Length: 335
Figure 1 (tube, rainbow, N blue to C red):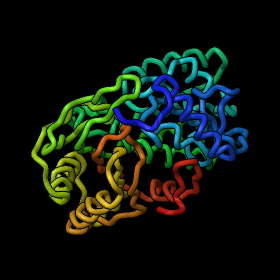
Figure 2: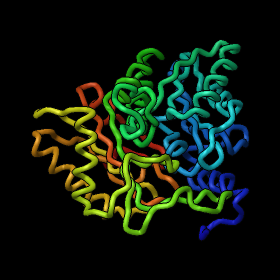
Figure 3: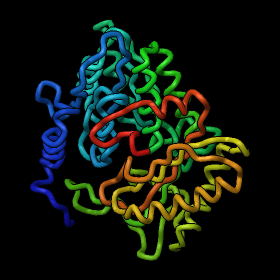
């Protein structure tokens, strides 16, 4: 294992300390607790709060979207491990400004269990909460059981649109509806070329040949659809797009936002080569692209590979996507 770190046991804490030192104008720890990151922007009384949470090792996901116009607070777990329900409850209490709190997080067993307990705990304080789960990974379950799908990079679009709706002072039910609408119109599939190494484990999460890639791999190394021999960028894009479009058909005149998300070890140049082919495929179908996102939005440590996300837009989602947002890792000013 080769990593630039001090000690595996302090990996998360020192990462968090570095983020707050760098971006103290945008984020801070809640009462000095590095496992609860909160927005440093002024609170808006009567605004719906948005809370997320998840394991470390995925920067910018989840905590990277705390700031203005997106997420108000994030509970932080160990690498690839769910945060405790007490940290989630603390995040919810911080985010509550009298209008309720939306808990928006990935569809993973530990996160679901702990958020449910945190919400139950906060209900004793008369904090109304609703939950929406990211479940955009088409490789993780068939369309017929889409509710079982994992949440991956597509949840970033839900943070963005729900955060904008909350800033418009919409009700909790309305903000939750926007988040759900965004998730319902989002599809993602990933491709992995190499495994990653969790610092406290010290060995790769899975094995794959030097001449192989895995289609549909999850961001924790969950098994994908198939292992294939290495192929060109256009061939990768063709396979991924055929799966995405079969799951969410698009017609001429439709408009989408495309996210090409590097998993941690893939050069940006390679991401743009894949985007080039994705754009060609959509152009051939008469589908236009609005506000493409190319870069790292949900990583898996040093894993080489990428994911492709499509968000089908309507007038409402398009407006919300354009609304101002500013976090340590996201601004729509350059989209």
